[in-house]
Length: 318
Image 1 (cartoon, rainbow, N blue to C red):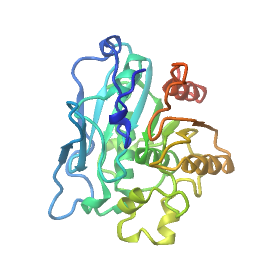
Image 2: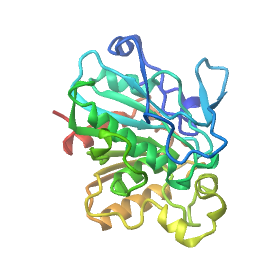
Image 3: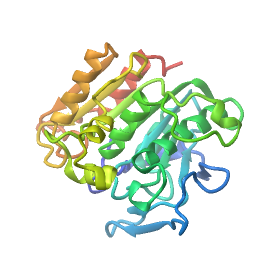
């Protein structure tokens, strides 16, 4: 699978795909608002969407403020009944995602998965939930997907996974382990659904908010004025106090990641093992802050296929 590494660095969830892959995705992407009205806890002054062009590549965008969180849907032409929520990164400073489905979403759709990319709100915009604002959106997204299963989308409500990249990996880890945390009052019938994913993929993830191995920029953006508060650091460290009903997790990173230390993935795996949660850990030699680099003989490491195989072992396959 060809990777647009510029987009993936910093945790954007996008790849370049071939024409056959594009052909397997229905033509018109959907952009679905997460909330029926304004999102919960909006500050009095409101929050407007602010988007920037990250590079000269057309469509390579990042959202530095999000007032209107959405799901962007890539429907497969031949759905296999499973769905995956994709959570891009950006260090909680921004959300690195496009207006249309990115490459990973298209690659998944080409394999039959209905893919949902999440544009989520950021704590620095003053939402009342503070550090739990992104988790509100992740929980709501899972509930909306599950509520539309079998009617709006050709998916099984029991077969929904999640993939998160960099800071999006932190949010994916939280939805996998803190799905039961009440972060908002129900707003409609969709909120009767469970937000628990069947399985999670955490790719070069931010995990800890403790001093050792922390990605300082993510901690600053997530915790704000309380970034030095030991209690808050523990509360938002994904590897701590993992419950017995957490979702199985596939965790992967690269030894040469100079952005988010690979030790974050080790910490997450150790926490999962201590809680006796099924988990798989892969640490590759090269790849920096992104997917693993091809072998020196040119062999491509099929990291996406590895995740999908793990997910199939835990029920995502039909």
